Length: 282
Image (tube, rainbow, N blue to C red; front, side, top):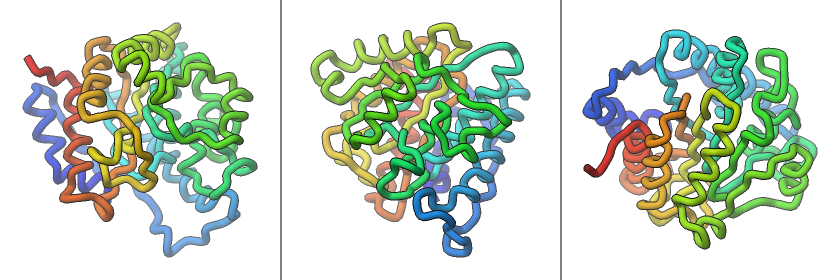
């Protein structure tokens, strides 16, 4: 329902008003959870999610081959394994690497061996960095999809002990917590983040989990954590991304209209997408 909420909030029309040509590629087929066997309790619905991510990756590759910029809507954050795999595969065929900006309250770097919940949406970054689960990480038959020095996490504020260990095991050092943003300001953090994600790469994928933003402004998310980015901080981050001009692809996840307030979270998601795609105040 998340993509529908974002469409209802006017994404297509707002992007067109900025001068972009927009094509809605429709929905990726996703199995209905209630009709499926959930599988192993430490990675529930992994098979179905991996299949969905493979279909997402193919759609992203096709989009890039057509010279378009993929904008993927979710859904929970497990879909990033598909989006990033598609972007990485397209650029790998050209002998290029990509970076990733992971804007999220959580690091999403659990594995089936470390996850306290068995929710695969807490595992996509681990998969993309080659920690597993293999079914999710080995789309296109190789892993990792991104180098640890080009994986940048921004605004994190809820990391469990196992995830801290996984960050070290994967070699990810570019982690900017909300304390970093509080102390240094969003501009300084984003400039450093974009430098790291863009170093030696063709550009970077932007993965925006709406729970990165404080629930005061984005209440319609599944795992809200107080103390996130403010409305203006979020827009500033997107504006800086647009200014740098190295964004290869963009995704918005964790829009859940069932628990939202009059579609506020989807409307903010549209506003932030517009800022990332070049909307300016003047």
